Amino acid sequence: MARLRDRLRRARPAPAGSEEPCLPCGDKAGIRSFSINPRRVEPLAGTDVVVANPHPLRTVVDGQLVVLDRTTDACHVLNPSAGLILDAVDGHRTVDDLVVWLHDETSVPPEVLRLDVDGALTSFLAQGLVRLAGEDEPPEPPPPLSPGQPSPHDDPRVMRRRRWAPTVNRVLSRTVPPHTVGPVRLAGTSVVAHTADADVAARLAEIFAPLPAATSAEHTAWLVERGQDGPRRWHLVLDGEMLGAVPEATAAVESFMVQLNLVVVAGSSGGVLLHAGAVEVDGRVVVIAGESGRGKSTLTAALVQAGFAYLTDELVVLDPATRRVLPYPKALDLSAKSQGLLGVGGADAGVATKNRVAPDRLGTVSPGGELALLVLLAPSWGVNDEPATTTPTRLTPVAALVELLQSTFAETFSIPDAMDVLGEMCETVPAVELPRMPVADAVEAVRRALG
Image (cartoon, rainbow, N blue to C red; front, side, top):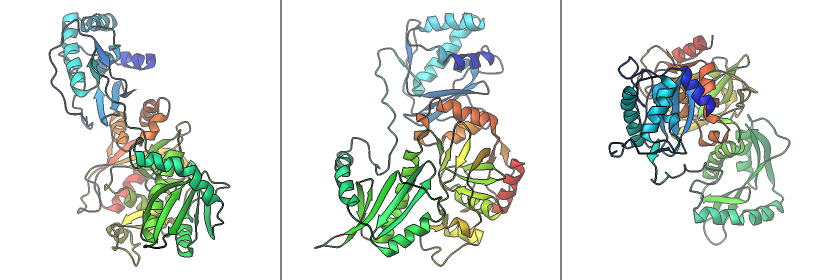
């Protein structure tokens, strides 16, 4: 916290009436501020004590305080004045004490500071960043999901499955499976799969083909067909936990692929986890982030076709110390329209909303590399609209962080000082926002930005 305060002090707060307004979430060019539903806030008295809520995470980027409230997924950008006020809220100082403390720190006249403090604290209260002393503490953010856990941790069905997992695992471990696929590495973890069905084994082998081999497996999956008196169903079992049953083998394999992503997320603790694609050239990695539907997989595939090596199209695992991106070269999920644009449509193109395309149909697979460029796809980017060429925008570090936080998995925040790690990454790695444009133009824009 001392380092946070030092960085805010170096960006001297501006007095009221200057060019920089002391607004906690003031509009800034290129930066989006998100807020929760504000509640009615009564005027503050000088004797009121304000307490900072414990769950928001903070970091200073370019002299501005970026605050992420994980209970609401709200992101706030505070200028240096507002950041210093929030930092001074310690749960003991009254409003009058805050004015005195800030006067000692800044030499700004108390009558000017009082206006800023009242305005800032009122906004903080409305946004849920602070509360009055004596009010209930807000709920903790939901815990991260783990493999096989699509419902809350206290769901009795989940707890029952987990209690039976050791027994199921022992029973299955005594079975000699006719077909074993793997083990393979999945970024920061590994998995092996067993099944008695030759066709299912062949499909799993196809899915695992681009993934690097592993010497052992941290996770074990079974795809088992069961049913005697009634219809037969396929059961997916991961580490002894039965995750559900489906009527067809194809659906079982699809469920398995969904669980693989959760395995990667849960098994890559200590890494920065992004919902993003990634490609590599000459050891330099380009990470392509954006909300679902903005074209991450399409652009990733186009870059691989253009000579970049493939790392992943959906889940980036990045070492926070070295910024090395680990390979997770799963088959790419591409819509029929994207496959048509890229010229890789197969016989089943258009049958499903998305189809899987093996990386070797596009180019080569990368062993990994160091992060060199962040490409953040603007909301209008995508292949479902008519393309319109516009100019890519070089993002400020603050704007890049605000956008990147929307693509960051909750598990990332188990890293010590995770917000500082992300903030420093955005300060030192160039970032561009790519608007909607033809795929070929997007590929060239990435080349130019990478240099």
